[in-house]
Structures are given as structure tokens and as C-alpha cells.
Image (cartoon, rainbow, N blue to C red; front, side):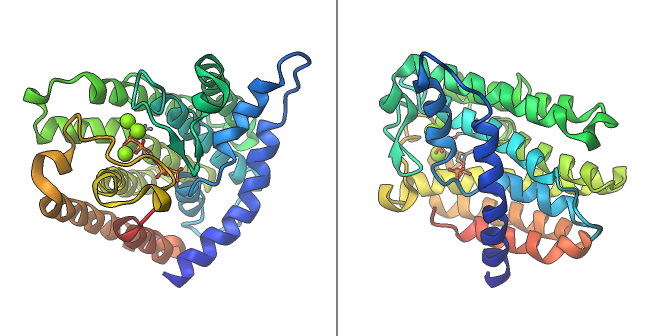
Length: 292
Ligand code: IPE
Ligand code: IPE
Ligand code: MG
Ligand code: MG
Ligand code: MG
């Protein structure tokens, strides 16, 4: 895991200031809390896995990455951060801790947290829409939008909260995971390929990789919800027992097995990913073994 750790470290050093800059664009004379809330969860040290997936898929062909690759990652991470702020609300998972800090609504109040999440989400599209490479690629913004909307993260979160347990079979669980978590991974990989000027075949390969990695990522998240600790994860544990997950339905061992199968499929796609292949494969190992 040496290579991946070094890559993520280096990537983070370039990425964090870009994210901070995007979040610092605006000023507000009367209620500085909104701006502070925008940064509160966003700048609290997430793993930045989705922007890294985007960056690695851009680099598949090995050509120089455009400088704006970081901004595309910022857009994806802003979508993700907004989803976390909403996911933690009392009306959703009612969480107290996120990325080692009190959740946004506990720190700033519910109304500010909701407004901050909205601001993060629209900022994502502002940043994405400004990227030169995407001005020629009119499908970039809708690609990210679809990953967020009713057939993406928002829809997945809603089904996750409200689908009756009695009809929550494996097919339904896979659907929920694919929408609430997989869709954003998939969009990140697709946007990366587009920024690297990859062809449609490569985009399909990237999409298959990310779809499987994303599903595995959520199963691991559900496993850690049972086996992990608050100190290590920096967020609440024991949250998802109320509604069934793969772990709730199948138990730890079988869920692990399914996760490993998904990671094997993602690894197979990484084999054809040229220069990025080894790191993308290592990312699969990381997702399977992570403790955070
Ligand atoms: C947590 O995502 C939410 C899920 C979709 C499982 P991450 O585990 O990537 O959280 P951060 O960004 O590192 O905090
Ligand atoms: C959240 O799933 C998926 C999102 C789109 C945010 P979880 O509710 O399991 O995520 P955590 O465990 O709170 O990070
Ligand atoms: Mg949730
Ligand atoms: Mg949650
Ligand atoms: Mg979870």
C-alpha cells in the first residue's frame, strides 16, 4: 500500500488548498456563520477518495493532467460533503460526529446546516461549469447532476430511509448502494476520463471500475458501522442497524465476501487502466481493508 499512501498524501497537498479556495470565494457582511458552516465539514479532513478516483482515471493514458483536474475533484468532493451534512441531520441519521468534529447542525444549528449543504451543492456546479475543458464537453455538468438527483444520491438516500424492511431484498439493497454511493464514484471516474480525453470504451471501463468500487465502499462502510470505533472513524457508529444493510441482512462474513467479489471485479477493470492501473488496483485493496 506504499505507493497509494504516497500518492494520496501528495494529491491531498495539492487538493486541500483548491477546495479551501473554492469555499472561500464568497463573502458575507452580516452572517459569517454560513461561510464558516460551509467549511466546517468540508475542511475537516475527509479521505478525498472520489477526487482521487477522478484524478487517476484522467491519468490512465499518462498524458499530463490539465491543471483544472483539481477543480473537477473539488466539484465532486463538494457534492459528497453536502451529502454528509444532510445525511447527519436529525431527520436523517441524527449523527453527532463527522470527520472527528461535531456534525454541522450541532455546531451551527439545523437551518444553517441545510443552507450550507445547499450552498456546497450549487458551488460544485459553479466550479465544474467554469472548467475550460468542460466548456467543449456539454455533458459534464449533466453527468454530475444525474449522479446527485433522483436517480443518484438523493434518490438512493430516500429509498434507504423509507423502503420498507420487508421488501429490502439484495436487489433493493444493491440499488440503494448504487444510487446513494456508487453514482458519485461513477461520475468521478467518467469525468476523469473525459478530462484526459479518453474515448468511450475507456469511459465504460472507468464506469465499471467505479460502480463496483462504490458498492464495495458502501458495504465496507456498513461493516465498519458494526465493527469500527468512533475514535478511529471520526463519526458515529451503530447508526445503520435500524434499517437493514447487507450486514444487517447477511451478517458480517457473507457481506465481506460480497465486498471482496465486487473489489475483484473492480481490480479486473484496473488491469486495463494503463499507467493508473497499479494505483487503481491498490485503491481496491485499501477500500477492502480500511479502518477509517
Ligand atoms: C462516507 O464517505 C459516506 C459514504 C458514502 C459511505 P467517506 O468514507 O468517503 O467519508 P470521508 O469523505 O472520508 O469523510
Ligand atoms: C451515506 O451512507 C451515503 C451518503 C450519500 C452520504 P451512511 O449514512 O452509511 O454514511 P455515513 O456512515 O453516515 O458516513
Ligand atoms: Mg445514511
Ligand atoms: Mg449516516
Ligand atoms: Mg455508514
